[in-house]
Length: 189
Image (cartoon, rainbow, N blue to C red; front, side, top):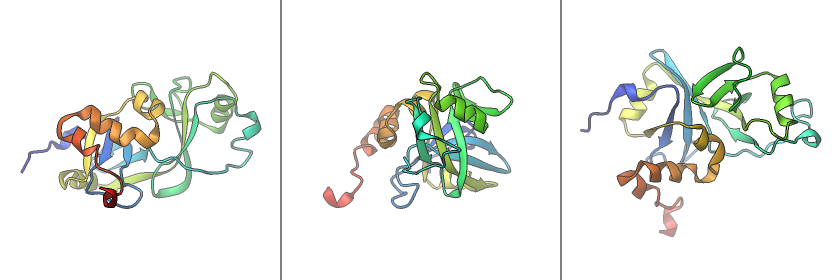
């Protein structure tokens, strides 16, 4: 059995679903780990686009000037809760830095100002999150359900979310690059 280090999972790490996860929301999912402690972990899925109409008090589409606003299904826990993932370091008292250039948090005023600014920061509006109890994520990792890779703002905000899973595996090279070629629907193989 390959010795897999427990300590590689940390805030600012991508969890990349292995081909063993072949159904459901996590199928070909990429999750940004936002917190990882002995007591549990939480992360936000970043590569599942979500079609959703938001109330005007959150986003008034007629005022949307920022071309870098996206909506994502963040995970199965509390899917009605919206979290902001963005590149702005202008509100440190409201945000948690996840990795270099990536921040989680912000209030409605920050969101409104950011979406009406044509030069505003890239923002992913994420609905829901993924959560694990103490030791649960490590067990899933050791069972072979996840690959890990350092996260980056480039991957989160500038790579097509539909292509992110395969793109990360190709970047990892070797056996991972080969896995990126597996078709989504094995019946077409």
